[in-house]
Every structure is written in C-alpha cells, then in structure tokens.
Length: 261
Image (cartoon, rainbow, N blue to C red; front, side, top):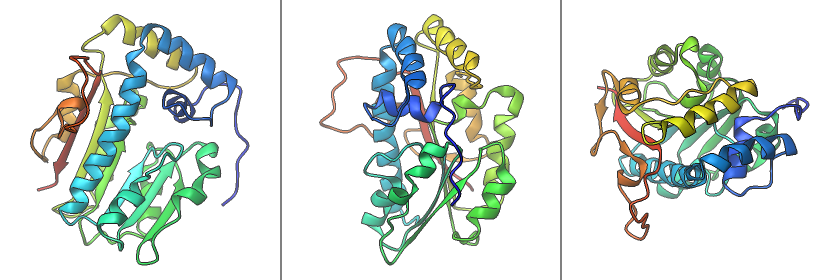
C-alpha cells in the first residue's frame, strides 16, 4: 500500500475521534479543534466511548446470528478490539473489509489485517462518497452471494445532505443479497441544539462536511429494511450492558441495526 503524506494543516474527523477516545494518534490541529468542541459539548467524549461499545455489541450480535462477512466504512484509527477480532472470536472464518480515507489509518493497517488464519481482512483507502470503488474492492474478498453486514458507525454525520447520504447508503446496500444487515450510529442535536450547532460550525470551518440529524432523519436511513429490536434508540438503550450505568446522562447518539428483506 502506498502511503500518502499526512495533511496536518487541518483537522481530520478520524484523528479527532481518536483524541476523544484518549488515543495518541492525533496532531495539534486535531487536538485544538477537539478541545474547542469538548469545551461546550463534554458529552462528546462519552458519545465516542459508547459508540465504540455499540460497534462491539452490534458486530458480536450479527456474528452470533451467523453473519461472517463485514464491510466497515469509516474504520478510523484502530482501537482494540477491532471489528475483525470481535467477529473472528465467534467465527474464525469471518472476512472483514475496512475502508477509510485518512493516511494515518492506512499507517495502522497492519493492525487491521491481523486476521485469524481461517479468515481474511482487507483495507481499502477510499471515501464513502466513492461507493463504486468500495464495492469493487470489497468484491475481491467478500462473496456477494452471501449476506454481508455493512457498518457505517459514526460516519454519516460527516456526510452532509449535499452529498446525498441516503442515496449513498442505498447504493452501498444494493449489491448485497437478502439477509444482509446495516449497522448505523449517528450523533444528534436533539438534546442540545445550540451546542451541536457550534460543533458543526467548527467541523465545517475545518473543511469537514458535518451535519447532525434528528431521530426521524436518522431512522430514514433504514427505509425498506427490517429493524432489529429495539429499533432506533439512543445508544445507551440499545442492548445495554448490565454493568454500565449512566445516571440518567443523555448520550447524543442514535443507533440501529436492520436487515435487508
């Protein structure tokens, strides 16, 4: 894989997310932007942690249901356990394709490609707005005759309406057979409109096309699909972990998993 130079002149959402998680793979420009967001949206750090936990729970749930192929777009900087580690624990033969457009993620691709011998992983450098490129690359490792789980976790709030996010999701799902799944999480301004308006402004001034969405706008991504119980929920209410307590804290993140009929 050819390494592109890292652009440290402006923030990148994957590196800002890593900073929210307490990671070390960010640059001063990312940390400055992230701290500005945290200053009036401290809940974003909790949202990042609970989002990661949702990905783990959703991937394991689908693996337990027999899904052994995953296409994870917007992978981000690896944080163990990675998706392939979760699903290959359930089924060592699971195959996972990771997709991201940040060269920092590419530099960590070795961690993403440590598959169990029975399974396989692949990394594609691409943007979610390049569905044809993603599908072409994914077909080299995934069998589109069998169900695939499409993971767009904490990604679509970086695809504003001018890029047609609903059409993009439909285009990505189209080649997959009946029985495939869609895993989504998305931040919302429903609980703090003013704070999230400021956060979106910071991202957009940095060249990141951010957009928060309401519950109804998020639910629209699942049109034509069969939602798994409990449907669209705030992340802390979706198959909650018994040992995690949030003391009534409202985490501004909607999640859901649905199956293609």
